[in-house]
Image (tube, rainbow, N blue to C red; front, top):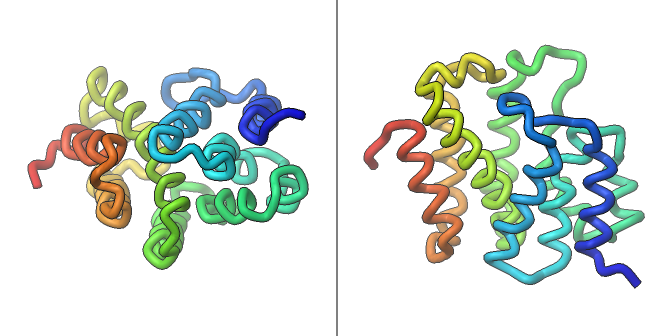
Length: 189
């Protein structure tokens, strides 16, 4: 019988097949794989690692949250759902960026669940690593190709995540994340 993580790898790879990351055009599946590896440095819980692999499938594909529960169980669904934004498909993403991020941060602030914090940290550290690579090439101009072009708003979001996940500060993943936020946003706090 296939373990949950292996099943989630295959499921995510199929769901994201043909998709690429916005800025660097790398195969999209590399992001959830990296997020899962990061989460795996903090826990060996298969539900949390599986959720890291699946964290974008509901948001970015036709897969529903109900399908996640049917295939991976209630806990994985809860974890994936905690990070799934209401994208408001009828509106341009740049018009909904702030409200989506406020809603997400409120969810994170009120969760009280270490597994959710780890999931978020894995996802956002993967993003910050990508941002760092882009920043080294393009500097502050990098934000012009994102839905939110204002680096101050981006800083607010990513710095708030650092604060909300600070209970994980003893993990090297959190330390790396916090350091990359400082570098990418040119802050010394």
